Length: 124
Image (cartoon, rainbow, N blue to C red; front, side, top):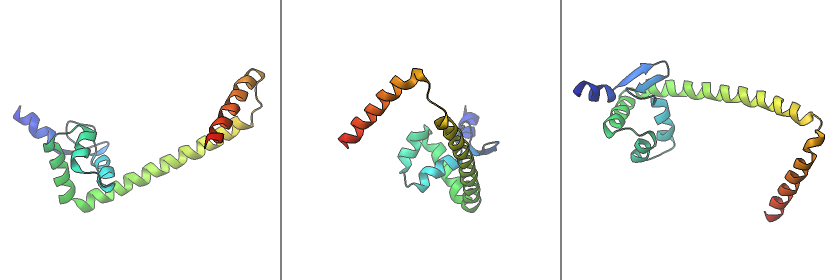
């Protein structure tokens, strides 16, 4: 039991990066909330981690600030590149769909949608 508690309060490197042992929570996920200014109790609640796990993670971040921050910036850059790739790919896909002719069976649905949009716009 003691070994299990110690394992949960450790930071390990996995294929996902620096991770709280016994969880799938990376330090980079915590960094998102830290950078956004969330208070510690809300971060702990968001990830369902113990006080000990949170304090271990925070201690690791503080002791290795430069390394963790550099890895975090790399994670953010990679995530932005992936988001941009899918946004571009979906934009092309949706443009092709929008250019397709309307099927006769969809005319009634489209008319209802346009009427609904008009009602919403008139209320705003």
